[in-house]
Image (cartoon, rainbow, N blue to C red):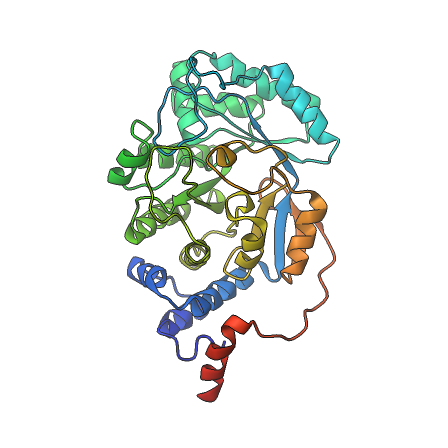
Length: 389
């Protein structure tokens, strides 16, 4: 048994997880409330290793935001603009194709495309964009649109969500993005994203996509006005839908970025909070294969640490990211493939280049085993545990 677990208040949960049991919402809340980050990390690391062994993945991708014009005014959003604003933008299909052409030269396998709810672009803009990108390279995987964008496109097309998704899939859409989940509790959504889709609508879009044979990621935006119980409830609803459809390929927890928006947050997410959120997500979501440490929001150094706290993926090369950086993220705009591999190896994991669906494209050489050392911050805990072993 891990020495951090022997005397921990979480030992019963550890034993339950090792035995293959499913933890309850009350136990998930206990995990969120514990100060024993070492024991929490040990449980999450066991759950991670049981899923993926020693591997950690990344994807070579590019982000494209087709426009930041949006009819909504979500309080937490620093990205959206109105037509009257001087720094709004809107890309033509030709401009998007050119960005894709440039990125293909760098070896990308995925385009990740989202934007605001544009007030005037027709439905044909979106289908034509997908078709043009597929014509450029049929192997390029197109991961596009959040649930609220799908609802907006259904409104534009004057069709059901299901028929809208069928037409987008026929045009080349391969995966939905997970953005827009925020926190599901109605009262929280009212505070941070008034007018956005409800939790039920978000989940129903993904449910419909999954029933059509599609797969998607999902997210949770944490560290703003929600409670720890709200986070547990959010994860509960994701786990329930996954039990029903098995269509989610991974969860991407997103730390709230507090700058340039209308939500006053006294204590934005700390490193401790991010690690415990990733760890609890890994332990509770036993029907999810993958948990991503989103380096854009965390920074690469903390994302490396997260690989020992339940995460098994650090996301992608990205190339050009606007949404988090306009909200104050201080991370770089991109990471090269070489840097991603180096970060994973430094964390003691075997790097795996993956595709959109977290399937391995290329397994790289593992890092050399690290020297047996003890983190000075853990030394006192180690002494206490060994003394009573």
